[in-house]
Length: 174
Figure (cartoon, rainbow, N blue to C red):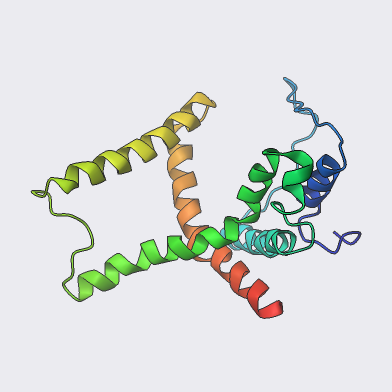
């Protein structure tokens, strides 16, 4: 990241090369060429994610913005880069979704429809449909139910911790 001054140099390098017209291929050999290195503890994972969130926000709000700079150069692929650049911002609605129902319950206000309410069926349908689709994607990619469940847990943990703190760190440093 020293060359670009970014904490997400791999993301930034790939994005800039695509914007300059380079072509990319996906190489997935039967036997992996290397396995990489990953953080071992939850604290290490959350720290790394926070650094990534700050780096992605730096790219999002730079002159190389994924929509303004990338869209004219790489077309709709810029939307995929934008999806990852906005990850930290997703923490705001996720944190609201995590905390508002608890506060409402303490005050005796219902945030979800009652089981006898006809709108409850729509709520259940949407929830099960979204979760089922995500689970199906995991299973089709040779994942297991346990891995999917752990992924859901990690998304919530990281969404209300390191993604949110990455947003705050970026906002305070800007």
